[in-house]
Length: 338
Image 1 (tube, rainbow, N blue to C red):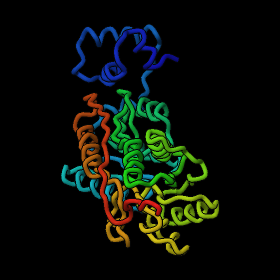
Image 2: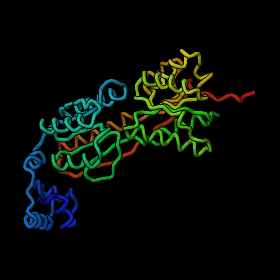
Image 3: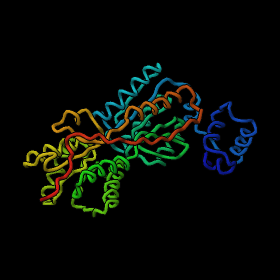
Image 4: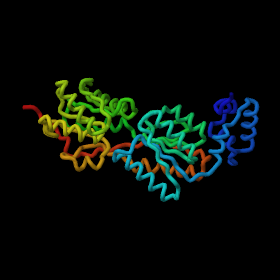
């Protein structure tokens, strides 16, 4: 059976143009429309009636998929999107994917069945190709958070995870630390992998050997930072600083060090990522890398709202955001040994 890709290959037109022809968009030039329609007929292409109906109808509902709701980070995303949707007189449906690939796919299907005009998904598990295929089969615009793509089939808004990790690690190096442990986010996510790669590359750029024994995988939450520090201490490895992939893990790490008689930052300096409110009120307050979460989320939801008005506009975007260092009390200059 012929696919949209086959039609694109035969005609030389983009998938966006072919989709507009299939969905009857009047903005397509007559000559282009004729070429596409003739090719569809010659190849025996049969449009997906469900996708057609979804692409041609208007809806005021926007879908939002998150891995969970139990953090400042995701709370900020939800609150920002909900306010923007309300201000635009649209409706919002929010679904929990339970941080699994199956959950993400099921959430997408659920929101399509509820006739959402566009879907914003914080995806950790579905591949770019899987998201593209869902977009093509459903006819619903997909805006992906926390990932960066280049395809015209999707929109993506994400942080430079490498820059965040590099900035945090380099801050500790600039303070004179050379034995730096790393507590990562889950390494089955691009966030965890990219931040670990940044840590490794930053050490390499400063001619400091990477030690696998100074790395421990966490799960982004407080108790995993606590547990990771205990494991690092059990290995009898020497370190004067820790790069924690999230502020929550940094808080847990501080607790574990305190229980083992180590003081932050006197004995061990710590830097996190996120700049959550807890990082300000923690004792000591946490040096961190601040993320422009509200800016990213606002620009993503503006595009999702745009698709409720112009579903066939073909206005897709890919935007990367950088973090900024916030120096507080948990990291200080390493004193030279006498």
